[in-house]
Image 1: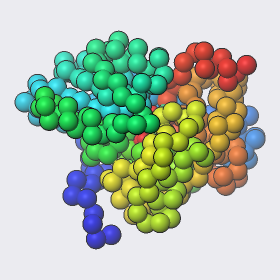
Image 2 (image 1 turned 45 degrees about the vertical axis):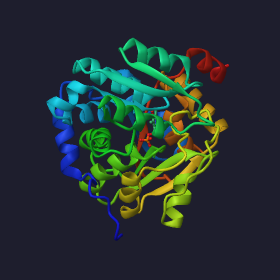
Image 3 (image 1 turned 45 degrees about the horizontal axis):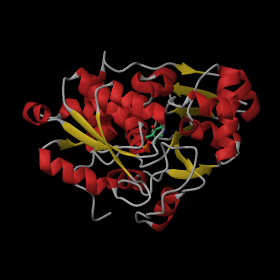
Length: 323
Ligand SMILES: *Cc1c(COP(=O)(O)O)cnc(C)c1O
C-alpha cells in the first residue's frame, strides 16, 4: 500500500507493552472444554480476557497508552470516547497512574459500564450515538483542556497493548492453526495480528464482527475503509461504524479474514460459557465461539485459539440470555 500510516505499530511495540504490563495486567488463564472440542471437532484454547482487570482486554491497551505518555502529558490528564470497556480500562489505568481522565460516552451505554467508569474516578460526558459524532466531541474537549486523547482502537500504543493477549496465548499453548478474535474497530485483532505474525507465522487469523454491521468485511473486500450506520446488536463492544486507519492497514497487509455472528448465535455462546465452562462472558466476548460453532470458520482437526474478549454484562441482561 502506498499510503501506509507513519505511526503503524510493529511487533517490538507489543514486546515493549508486555514489559510495561508485567505485574500490572493479569496474565489471564487459557481454558479448554471437552464439550466444545467434541462439538467442533477441533482443539480449542480459550484466552480468558473476561477475567482481565476491569473485565476486558481493553486494560492492556489503555494502560500501555497512558504509560507511554511523557510526564508532562500525563499531568494534564487523558480523554477518550468509548462504548464502555475502553472507558473503564482507561479510568482504571489512570487511577493506578494518578492521572485525571474524562470519558465521552453514549447516553444509552449499559448502566454497569457507566457506574464502573465512575467508580474508577472517570469524569463522564454523555452524547447521543444516533445524532452526534463522539470523535468530534472528544477532539474539541482535548483541545480545550490540553488532555491527551487516547481513542479505543486507532492508536499505536493501544494496538500494541492489545497484542499482548495473543502473545501470552501463543507463549502458553504453542503454535496455532487458527486464531479467532472479536472485531470492532480492530484494535484487538490488529494487535493480535502483530503478535501472531511473529510467533505463529502460518496461523490463519479470523476476525468476527456482528452480522448487523459487517463494515470490516466490506472494507477488506473493497480495499478501503467502509463506514456504515451504527448497527444494532447485543455485541455492544463491537458496534463500531468503521475500522481504524491503523488496524485497517495491519489487517489488510496480513490478509486477515473476517466473518460474522448473529445475536441469536451470541446468546447461544453466552449460554455455553455459563453452563459448560462456568464463565461469564459478555455477548461481544462470545463472537469468537459463536463463529466457530456456526461454521463460519472451518476448524475441524485444527488447533484453534479463541479470544474471550470481555465479561462486562449487566446481570439483568445476562439473566435474560440465560433464561
Ligand atoms: C472493544 C471490545 C471488542 C472490540 O475490540 P476492537 O479493538 O474495537 O476491535 C471486543 N470485545 C470486547 C469485550 C470489547 O470490549
